[in-house]
Structures are given as C-alpha cells and as structure tokens.
Image (cartoon, rainbow, N blue to C red; front, top):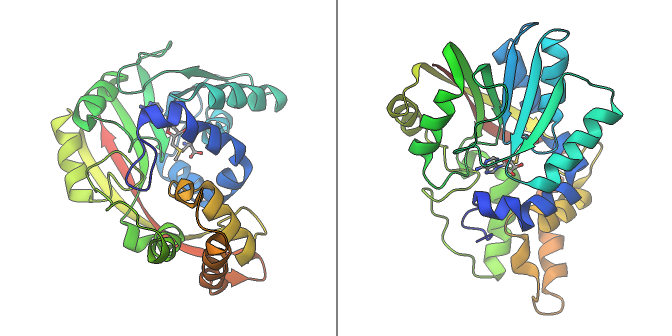
Length: 282
Ligand SMILES: C[S@@+](CC[C@H](N)C(=O)[O-])C[C@H]1O[C@@H](n2cnc3c(N)ncnc32)[C@H](O)[C@@H]1O
C-alpha cells in the first residue's frame, strides 16, 4: 500500500516507481549530495565489479561505472521495471559501456555477475518486507572480504524536507500514524538497530557514520514554491490530496511554500537533511 505510512517493494514496482520516473530529474538532483557522499566513502577502484541495489534511474550506477572503468563494471538492480528501462536508456545515451541494469527484487534476486566486489546503494535498501532475510541474501552477493556501502535516511525529525511538509498536510487531513517498522524511507533510521540487523545477516566490521547536508528539494535552482509543488506532487503522502475539498489544496500549498521559504538561498533550495553512511564487510 502506498501511503504516508510506508512504501513497499510492491509499490515501487507499480505506482511509486511510475511517480519516481515522472519526477526523476528532480529526485536525482535533490539526492546528488548524498550520492557524492556515498561514493566518496565507498572509494571504489578501477577494476572492481559493483552491484547498485535499488538503483532507480541509475545516477549512482553511472557515476560508479566511471570510477571502476575501464576494466570494472556496475550492475544496477531495481524492482521497478520502468526505472530499469529508463536507466538503460540514459546509460546508452551517455555512451557508458560498463554498466547494465536488471529488474529484480533485491531481497532474493541473483544478478548475473554475482558475487560482486562491492555493493552500493543510495536509499534503495529500506523497503524490504523482511529486512533480515533480504540482507542475508545481499551478503551472499559479495565475494569473501567484499564490502557494502549503503546510505539510508536518519529519522523524520532530522529530515524536515519531508517531515515539515507532512506535518502541514496532517494539520488538515488525517494521515495514518507512521509505523517506524514498516518498509519505507525511515525504516533503517536507527543506526543501532541497523548495526544489529547487518550483524544477524552475517556482515562484520560494521561502521555507521552520520551525514549532514542540505538538499535542493524540487531540483537544482528550485525555489520555495517549486519545492512545495514538488513535495505535494511527488512525496509518498501526495495521494492524500487527491479528492481534497476545493480550496484545501491551495491552503496547504501556501503553507508548505511558506515553510520552505526559510531554506531559500540565492543558489536554490538548501533544506537540511541527515542520513547514515553504513559500511559493512562480508
Ligand atoms: C528512494 S529510491 C532511490 C533510487 C536510487 N537509488 C537513487 O538514489 O536515485 C528507492 C529505490 O529502491 C527500489 N526498490 C525498493 N524495493 C526494492 C527491492 N525489494 N528490490 C530492488 N529495488 C527496490 C525502488 O524501486 C526505487 O528505485
């Protein structure tokens, strides 16, 4: 079920994936600072073979492909077929030959080329129905001594880019209580719980570091009005606005715009965000 409570892999293969595709450029621009931090920390090297888990439109896969070229390769995996089509199209258009994409549920799928030297993921590993089983499977996709680098969101309170707009919507429309244990963007927000989960899944040398940054909600060069439009159109709670009383959507949009104004800069939006950089060895 795709609502403000959670987003599962099934949602991603269907409506949520279609929505991500429709907003792909804005999302990829918004998440660029996180991708840079993830790849800095992963320190990929020429010749390595990488799997990018829940790779979406493939931005991090393409960046990783440059880092491991010419002899290394990247295999992007995602449950959403429409995103794999678009990721393939974008890689071909960019003339990147050492990246490929496959549709599959990363909780159980064994991609061609496994086992890999490295796994990476920017925000693609929080949606598993059974995280322990999924991470146990992901562990088997690594060579002995291989390494995983995942980035996951910290708590909603530390991510006002999402929780600020959601709170304004909730003033007017009843939203389901967020379940922190349901698959969704904040499912791995507790670093202690994530560490235990990875340990149970067979990973070792687990190291989790905080990333603090500012993200351009709505895409590069966005302003408060565009950020509000984007959040009400593209975030997981957006569907609750469908069928709202006449006038209510405008009221909410005005309030969300006012909220985002505090984060406007001459270069565009810079909304505080926090995520965890999770590193673990196989
Ligand atoms: C928040 S998006 C991030 C996409 C991409 N990593 C990025 O940073 O642009 C989460 C991605 O995880 C994918 N995903 C969710 N559950 C999955 C699963 N069980 N197996 C593979 N991919 C999954 C979604 O389809 C979506 O593309």
